[in-house]
View 1: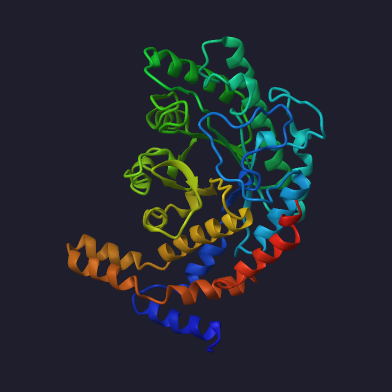
View 2: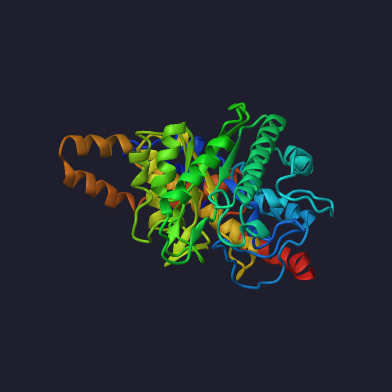
Length: 418
Protein backbone atom coordinates (compact mmCIF):
# COMPACT_ATOMS: atom_id res chain seq x y z
CA UNK A 1 0.00 0.00 0.00
CA UNK A 2 1.33 3.40 -0.98
CA UNK A 3 2.30 5.69 1.86
CA UNK A 4 -0.11 8.44 2.81
CA UNK A 5 2.58 11.00 2.04
CA UNK A 6 2.84 9.73 -1.54
CA UNK A 7 -0.93 9.72 -1.93
CA UNK A 8 -1.01 13.26 -0.58
CA UNK A 9 1.70 14.31 -3.04
CA UNK A 10 -0.40 12.97 -5.90
CA UNK A 11 -3.52 14.68 -4.58
CA UNK A 12 -1.61 17.92 -4.14
CA UNK A 13 -0.59 17.79 -7.80
CA UNK A 14 -4.19 17.23 -8.89
CA UNK A 15 -5.40 20.20 -6.88
CA UNK A 16 -2.60 22.40 -8.23
CA UNK A 17 -4.00 21.83 -11.71
CA UNK A 18 -7.06 23.88 -10.74
CA UNK A 19 -5.11 26.53 -8.86
CA UNK A 20 -5.47 25.13 -5.32
CA UNK A 21 -2.48 24.97 -2.96
CA UNK A 22 -3.15 21.95 -0.71
CA UNK A 23 -0.26 22.85 1.62
CA UNK A 24 -1.81 26.28 2.21
CA UNK A 25 -5.22 24.71 2.83
CA UNK A 26 -3.74 22.47 5.53
CA UNK A 27 -1.92 25.42 7.06
CA UNK A 28 -5.18 27.36 7.31
CA UNK A 29 -7.01 24.37 8.76
CA UNK A 30 -4.31 23.94 11.40
CA UNK A 31 -5.07 27.43 12.70
CA UNK A 32 -8.78 26.67 13.15
CA UNK A 33 -9.86 25.97 16.72
CA UNK A 34 -13.25 24.38 17.18
CA UNK A 35 -14.88 24.98 20.56
CA UNK A 36 -15.96 21.56 21.87
CA UNK A 37 -19.01 21.68 24.13
CA UNK A 38 -18.84 20.17 27.61
CA UNK A 39 -22.52 19.17 27.65
CA UNK A 40 -22.25 16.21 25.25
CA UNK A 41 -20.25 14.32 27.89
CA UNK A 42 -23.01 14.15 30.51
CA UNK A 43 -26.27 14.87 28.65
CA UNK A 44 -26.40 18.52 29.82
CA UNK A 45 -26.43 17.52 33.47
CA UNK A 46 -23.92 19.92 34.97
CA UNK A 47 -22.39 19.79 38.44
CA UNK A 48 -24.71 22.17 40.23
CA UNK A 49 -26.67 20.55 43.05
CA UNK A 50 -29.55 23.00 42.63
CA UNK A 51 -30.57 21.60 39.24
CA UNK A 52 -34.04 20.19 38.77
CA UNK A 53 -33.48 18.39 35.49
CA UNK A 54 -33.57 19.75 31.96
CA UNK A 55 -36.12 22.34 30.87
CA UNK A 56 -36.27 25.33 28.57
CA UNK A 57 -36.85 23.32 25.41
CA UNK A 58 -33.77 21.16 26.02
CA UNK A 59 -34.04 17.40 25.97
CA UNK A 60 -31.26 14.82 25.84
CA UNK A 61 -32.70 11.52 24.65
CA UNK A 62 -31.24 8.07 25.17
CA UNK A 63 -29.64 6.23 28.07
CA UNK A 64 -26.42 4.87 26.62
CA UNK A 65 -24.15 3.84 29.53
CA UNK A 66 -20.96 5.60 30.51
CA UNK A 67 -21.84 9.28 30.77
CA UNK A 68 -19.54 11.54 32.77
CA UNK A 69 -20.65 11.72 36.42
CA UNK A 70 -18.02 14.07 37.83
CA UNK A 71 -15.64 16.76 36.73
CA UNK A 72 -12.84 14.20 36.76
CA UNK A 73 -14.84 11.93 34.45
CA UNK A 74 -15.48 14.80 32.08
CA UNK A 75 -11.85 15.90 31.99
CA UNK A 76 -10.68 12.34 31.33
CA UNK A 77 -13.24 11.93 28.57
CA UNK A 78 -12.17 15.17 26.92
CA UNK A 79 -8.52 14.16 27.06
CA UNK A 80 -9.51 11.08 25.08
CA UNK A 81 -11.62 13.13 22.66
CA UNK A 82 -8.84 15.61 21.92
CA UNK A 83 -6.43 12.76 21.22
CA UNK A 84 -8.61 11.65 18.31
CA UNK A 85 -9.22 14.99 16.61
CA UNK A 86 -6.57 16.66 14.40
CA UNK A 87 -5.58 20.18 15.41
CA UNK A 88 -5.67 22.10 18.70
CA UNK A 89 -9.15 22.99 19.85
CA UNK A 90 -10.98 24.93 22.53
CA UNK A 91 -13.47 23.92 25.22
CA UNK A 92 -16.89 25.47 25.83
CA UNK A 93 -18.28 25.42 29.38
CA UNK A 94 -21.79 26.15 30.64
CA UNK A 95 -22.02 28.05 33.91
CA UNK A 96 -23.59 25.19 35.85
CA UNK A 97 -20.51 23.04 35.22
CA UNK A 98 -18.52 24.96 37.82
CA UNK A 99 -16.39 23.35 40.51
CA UNK A 100 -18.84 23.81 43.39
CA UNK A 101 -17.05 21.38 45.74
CA UNK A 102 -20.38 20.01 46.98
CA UNK A 103 -21.61 23.44 48.11
CA UNK A 104 -24.92 24.95 47.10
CA UNK A 105 -23.96 28.11 45.22
CA UNK A 106 -26.82 29.68 43.32
CA UNK A 107 -26.28 31.17 39.90
CA UNK A 108 -26.40 34.77 41.07
CA UNK A 109 -23.48 34.00 43.40
CA UNK A 110 -21.01 32.16 41.14
CA UNK A 111 -17.66 33.71 40.36
CA UNK A 112 -14.15 33.00 39.05
CA UNK A 113 -13.43 30.84 42.12
CA UNK A 114 -15.71 28.10 40.79
CA UNK A 115 -13.80 27.95 37.51
CA UNK A 116 -10.18 28.12 38.64
CA UNK A 117 -9.78 24.35 38.39
CA UNK A 118 -11.07 24.48 34.82
CA UNK A 119 -8.51 27.16 34.02
CA UNK A 120 -5.71 25.07 35.49
CA UNK A 121 -6.87 22.09 33.45
CA UNK A 122 -6.94 24.21 30.29
CA UNK A 123 -3.40 25.43 30.99
CA UNK A 124 -2.29 21.82 31.32
CA UNK A 125 -4.07 20.94 28.07
CA UNK A 126 -2.81 24.13 26.39
CA UNK A 127 -6.27 25.06 25.14
CA UNK A 128 -8.61 28.04 25.36
CA UNK A 129 -12.03 28.13 27.02
CA UNK A 130 -15.32 29.71 25.97
CA UNK A 131 -18.23 30.27 28.32
CA UNK A 132 -22.04 30.13 28.39
CA UNK A 133 -24.53 31.55 30.86
CA UNK A 134 -27.02 28.90 32.03
CA UNK A 135 -30.62 30.10 32.02
CA UNK A 136 -32.35 26.73 32.17
CA UNK A 137 -32.77 23.82 34.64
CA UNK A 138 -33.44 26.14 37.58
CA UNK A 139 -36.49 26.96 39.76
CA UNK A 140 -36.41 30.57 38.58
CA UNK A 141 -36.75 29.44 34.96
CA UNK A 142 -39.51 26.90 35.57
CA UNK A 143 -42.29 28.93 33.95
CA UNK A 144 -40.31 29.53 30.75
CA UNK A 145 -39.20 33.13 31.32
CA UNK A 146 -35.95 34.60 32.69
CA UNK A 147 -34.58 37.94 31.42
CA UNK A 148 -38.00 38.83 29.99
CA UNK A 149 -39.99 37.74 33.05
CA UNK A 150 -42.81 40.00 34.24
CA UNK A 151 -41.48 39.67 37.79
CA UNK A 152 -38.64 42.15 38.31
CA UNK A 153 -37.06 40.04 41.07
CA UNK A 154 -36.76 37.11 38.64
CA UNK A 155 -35.24 39.36 36.00
CA UNK A 156 -32.80 40.82 38.50
CA UNK A 157 -31.67 37.33 39.53
CA UNK A 158 -30.84 36.40 35.94
CA UNK A 159 -29.27 39.77 35.21
CA UNK A 160 -26.90 39.19 38.12
CA UNK A 161 -26.16 35.69 36.81
CA UNK A 162 -25.23 37.05 33.38
CA UNK A 163 -23.08 39.81 34.90
CA UNK A 164 -21.15 37.22 36.88
CA UNK A 165 -20.76 35.04 33.80
CA UNK A 166 -19.25 37.96 31.93
CA UNK A 167 -16.78 38.49 34.80
CA UNK A 168 -15.93 34.79 34.78
CA UNK A 169 -15.36 34.94 31.03
CA UNK A 170 -13.00 37.89 31.38
CA UNK A 171 -11.13 36.05 34.15
CA UNK A 172 -10.78 32.95 31.97
CA UNK A 173 -9.54 34.94 28.98
CA UNK A 174 -7.01 36.83 31.06
CA UNK A 175 -5.69 33.72 32.80
CA UNK A 176 -5.35 31.72 29.59
CA UNK A 177 -4.18 34.67 27.48
CA UNK A 178 -6.80 33.66 24.95
CA UNK A 179 -10.02 35.58 24.39
CA UNK A 180 -13.07 33.87 25.87
CA UNK A 181 -16.36 34.22 23.99
CA UNK A 182 -19.33 34.47 26.35
CA UNK A 183 -22.50 33.22 24.68
CA UNK A 184 -25.92 34.20 26.01
CA UNK A 185 -29.00 32.14 25.16
CA UNK A 186 -32.27 32.14 27.08
CA UNK A 187 -35.26 29.76 26.81
CA UNK A 188 -37.87 32.51 27.22
CA UNK A 189 -41.10 31.88 25.38
CA UNK A 190 -44.62 30.50 25.56
CA UNK A 191 -46.37 27.31 24.51
CA UNK A 192 -49.45 29.00 23.10
CA UNK A 193 -50.90 32.32 21.99
CA UNK A 194 -49.08 35.29 23.53
CA UNK A 195 -50.77 38.68 23.35
CA UNK A 196 -48.13 40.96 24.88
CA UNK A 197 -45.09 39.91 22.86
CA UNK A 198 -43.93 43.51 22.71
CA UNK A 199 -43.66 43.79 26.50
CA UNK A 200 -41.54 40.64 26.83
CA UNK A 201 -39.15 41.81 24.13
CA UNK A 202 -39.00 45.25 25.69
CA UNK A 203 -38.10 43.64 29.02
CA UNK A 204 -35.46 41.47 27.37
CA UNK A 205 -33.86 44.46 25.69
CA UNK A 206 -33.81 46.34 29.00
CA UNK A 207 -32.25 43.36 30.82
CA UNK A 208 -29.59 42.97 28.14
CA UNK A 209 -28.77 46.67 28.34
CA UNK A 210 -28.17 46.33 32.08
CA UNK A 211 -26.00 43.25 31.55
CA UNK A 212 -23.89 44.77 28.81
CA UNK A 213 -23.43 48.10 30.62
CA UNK A 214 -20.49 46.70 32.57
CA UNK A 215 -17.37 47.22 30.45
CA UNK A 216 -15.09 44.25 29.90
CA UNK A 217 -11.69 44.06 28.25
CA UNK A 218 -12.29 42.89 24.65
CA UNK A 219 -8.84 41.32 24.61
CA UNK A 220 -10.03 38.84 27.23
CA UNK A 221 -13.73 38.36 26.51
CA UNK A 222 -16.44 39.22 24.04
CA UNK A 223 -20.20 38.73 24.18
CA UNK A 224 -22.38 36.83 21.75
CA UNK A 225 -26.19 36.55 21.68
CA UNK A 226 -28.06 33.53 20.33
CA UNK A 227 -31.58 33.25 18.95
CA UNK A 228 -33.94 30.30 18.64
CA UNK A 229 -36.94 29.44 16.47
CA UNK A 230 -38.89 27.42 19.05
CA UNK A 231 -38.48 24.78 21.72
CA UNK A 232 -40.49 22.41 23.88
CA UNK A 233 -42.74 24.71 25.85
CA UNK A 234 -42.07 27.67 23.54
CA UNK A 235 -43.71 26.40 20.38
CA UNK A 236 -45.74 29.55 19.72
CA UNK A 237 -43.51 32.36 20.93
CA UNK A 238 -39.78 32.80 21.52
CA UNK A 239 -38.77 36.17 22.95
CA UNK A 240 -35.17 36.07 21.68
CA UNK A 241 -35.95 35.57 18.00
CA UNK A 242 -33.46 35.88 15.16
CA UNK A 243 -34.73 39.34 14.24
CA UNK A 244 -34.50 40.50 17.85
CA UNK A 245 -30.89 39.45 18.34
CA UNK A 246 -29.81 40.45 14.86
CA UNK A 247 -30.93 43.99 15.61
CA UNK A 248 -29.41 43.93 19.08
CA UNK A 249 -26.05 42.63 17.85
CA UNK A 250 -25.87 45.21 15.07
CA UNK A 251 -26.85 48.09 17.35
CA UNK A 252 -24.43 47.10 20.11
CA UNK A 253 -21.57 45.81 17.93
CA UNK A 254 -21.69 42.30 19.38
CA UNK A 255 -21.08 38.82 18.04
CA UNK A 256 -24.22 37.18 16.71
CA UNK A 257 -24.56 33.44 17.30
CA UNK A 258 -26.16 31.35 14.58
CA UNK A 259 -27.11 27.89 15.84
CA UNK A 260 -27.74 25.70 12.80
CA UNK A 261 -30.58 23.91 14.61
CA UNK A 262 -32.38 27.11 15.60
CA UNK A 263 -33.90 27.74 12.20
CA UNK A 264 -36.45 26.06 9.99
CA UNK A 265 -35.06 22.82 8.51
CA UNK A 266 -35.35 24.21 4.96
CA UNK A 267 -33.69 27.53 5.83
CA UNK A 268 -30.07 27.89 4.77
CA UNK A 269 -27.80 29.14 7.54
CA UNK A 270 -24.98 29.27 5.00
CA UNK A 271 -26.85 31.97 3.12
CA UNK A 272 -26.87 34.14 6.24
CA UNK A 273 -23.08 34.55 6.24
CA UNK A 274 -22.84 37.07 3.41
CA UNK A 275 -25.87 39.03 4.63
CA UNK A 276 -25.06 39.36 8.31
CA UNK A 277 -21.40 40.17 7.70
CA UNK A 278 -22.54 43.35 5.98
CA UNK A 279 -23.48 44.65 9.43
CA UNK A 280 -21.49 42.76 12.10
CA UNK A 281 -17.78 42.11 12.32
CA UNK A 282 -17.86 38.61 13.81
CA UNK A 283 -20.14 35.57 13.92
CA UNK A 284 -20.28 32.53 16.18
CA UNK A 285 -21.69 29.38 14.63
CA UNK A 286 -23.02 26.54 16.77
CA UNK A 287 -22.59 23.64 14.39
CA UNK A 288 -25.20 20.97 14.93
CA UNK A 289 -27.63 18.86 12.92
CA UNK A 290 -31.34 19.35 13.30
CA UNK A 291 -33.61 16.51 12.28
CA UNK A 292 -37.16 17.86 11.72
CA UNK A 293 -36.56 20.34 14.53
CA UNK A 294 -33.76 21.53 16.84
CA UNK A 295 -32.94 18.02 17.99
CA UNK A 296 -29.18 18.54 18.27
CA UNK A 297 -27.98 15.48 16.39
CA UNK A 298 -24.29 14.72 15.90
CA UNK A 299 -22.72 16.79 13.14
CA UNK A 300 -22.05 14.92 9.90
CA UNK A 301 -20.08 15.59 6.74
CA UNK A 302 -23.27 16.47 4.89
CA UNK A 303 -24.61 19.16 2.58
CA UNK A 304 -25.64 21.76 5.23
CA UNK A 305 -22.27 21.53 7.02
CA UNK A 306 -20.29 21.61 3.78
CA UNK A 307 -22.32 24.55 2.46
CA UNK A 308 -21.80 26.52 5.67
CA UNK A 309 -18.03 26.07 5.54
CA UNK A 310 -17.97 26.86 1.83
CA UNK A 311 -19.79 30.13 2.37
CA UNK A 312 -17.47 31.13 5.22
CA UNK A 313 -14.41 30.48 3.04
CA UNK A 314 -15.89 31.92 -0.15
CA UNK A 315 -16.81 35.11 1.73
CA UNK A 316 -13.24 35.38 3.04
CA UNK A 317 -14.46 35.44 6.65
CA UNK A 318 -12.77 32.42 8.21
CA UNK A 319 -10.75 34.69 10.49
CA UNK A 320 -13.97 36.41 11.65
CA UNK A 321 -15.92 33.26 12.52
CA UNK A 322 -15.92 31.30 15.78
CA UNK A 323 -16.91 27.65 15.31
CA UNK A 324 -18.42 25.73 18.19
CA UNK A 325 -20.11 22.34 18.33
CA UNK A 326 -23.51 22.09 20.01
CA UNK A 327 -25.36 18.79 20.28
CA UNK A 328 -26.08 16.17 22.92
CA UNK A 329 -26.84 12.63 21.87
CA UNK A 330 -27.36 10.25 24.78
CA UNK A 331 -28.23 7.30 22.55
CA UNK A 332 -24.68 6.49 21.39
CA UNK A 333 -21.16 6.38 22.79
CA UNK A 334 -20.61 9.98 23.84
CA UNK A 335 -16.89 10.01 23.04
CA UNK A 336 -17.79 8.77 19.57
CA UNK A 337 -20.36 11.53 19.24
CA UNK A 338 -17.71 14.16 19.94
CA UNK A 339 -15.19 12.67 17.53
CA UNK A 340 -17.61 12.10 14.66
CA UNK A 341 -18.94 15.65 14.93
CA UNK A 342 -15.60 17.40 15.28
CA UNK A 343 -13.97 15.47 12.46
CA UNK A 344 -17.01 16.08 10.24
CA UNK A 345 -16.83 19.83 10.85
CA UNK A 346 -13.11 19.87 10.08
CA UNK A 347 -13.58 17.72 6.96
CA UNK A 348 -16.23 20.12 5.71
CA UNK A 349 -13.96 23.07 6.29
CA UNK A 350 -11.04 21.37 4.55
CA UNK A 351 -13.25 20.65 1.54
CA UNK A 352 -14.08 24.35 1.38
CA UNK A 353 -10.41 25.35 1.68
CA UNK A 354 -9.60 23.01 -1.21
CA UNK A 355 -12.02 24.74 -3.58
CA UNK A 356 -10.61 26.95 -6.39
CA UNK A 357 -12.26 30.11 -5.11
CA UNK A 358 -10.42 32.57 -7.37
CA UNK A 359 -11.20 30.63 -10.52
CA UNK A 360 -14.83 30.09 -9.54
CA UNK A 361 -15.31 33.81 -8.86
CA UNK A 362 -13.57 34.71 -12.11
CA UNK A 363 -15.90 32.43 -14.06
CA UNK A 364 -18.93 33.88 -12.31
CA UNK A 365 -17.93 37.49 -12.85
CA UNK A 366 -17.28 36.79 -16.54
CA UNK A 367 -20.69 35.20 -16.88
CA UNK A 368 -19.15 31.79 -17.58
CA UNK A 369 -21.67 29.87 -15.53
CA UNK A 370 -21.26 26.60 -17.42
CA UNK A 371 -17.56 26.59 -16.59
CA UNK A 372 -18.25 27.47 -12.96
CA UNK A 373 -20.75 24.67 -12.44
CA UNK A 374 -18.61 22.19 -14.36
CA UNK A 375 -15.60 22.94 -12.15
CA UNK A 376 -17.68 22.54 -9.00
CA UNK A 377 -18.98 19.19 -10.25
CA UNK A 378 -15.54 17.87 -11.17
CA UNK A 379 -14.20 19.00 -7.80
CA UNK A 380 -16.48 16.46 -6.11
CA UNK A 381 -14.36 13.56 -7.44
CA UNK A 382 -10.98 15.07 -6.53
CA UNK A 383 -8.82 13.07 -4.05
CA UNK A 384 -10.03 14.90 -0.97
CA UNK A 385 -9.66 11.86 1.32
CA UNK A 386 -5.92 11.64 0.63
CA UNK A 387 -5.50 15.20 1.88
CA UNK A 388 -7.65 14.58 4.97
CA UNK A 389 -5.84 11.35 5.86
CA UNK A 390 -2.47 13.07 5.50
CA UNK A 391 -3.66 15.89 7.76
CA UNK A 392 -4.69 13.38 10.45
CA UNK A 393 -1.34 11.64 10.18
CA UNK A 394 0.54 14.95 10.48
CA UNK A 395 -1.37 15.65 13.69
CA UNK A 396 -0.69 12.21 15.16
CA UNK A 397 -4.32 11.13 15.38
CA UNK A 398 -5.95 7.97 13.98
CA UNK A 399 -6.52 7.94 10.24
CA UNK A 400 -9.83 6.82 8.75
CA UNK A 401 -11.74 4.20 10.73
CA UNK A 402 -8.81 3.60 13.09
CA UNK A 403 -10.37 5.79 15.78
CA UNK A 404 -13.31 3.38 16.13
CA UNK A 405 -11.14 0.75 17.83
CA UNK A 406 -9.62 3.37 20.12
CA UNK A 407 -13.06 4.44 21.32
CA UNK A 408 -14.21 0.84 21.72
CA UNK A 409 -11.19 0.17 23.91
CA UNK A 410 -11.89 3.27 26.04
CA UNK A 411 -15.46 2.13 26.46
CA UNK A 412 -14.38 -1.32 27.58
CA UNK A 413 -11.74 -0.02 30.00
CA UNK A 414 -13.40 3.16 31.33
CA UNK A 415 -16.97 3.92 30.29
CA UNK A 416 -18.39 0.46 30.95
CA UNK A 417 -17.22 0.62 34.57
CA UNK A 418 -19.21 3.75 35.44
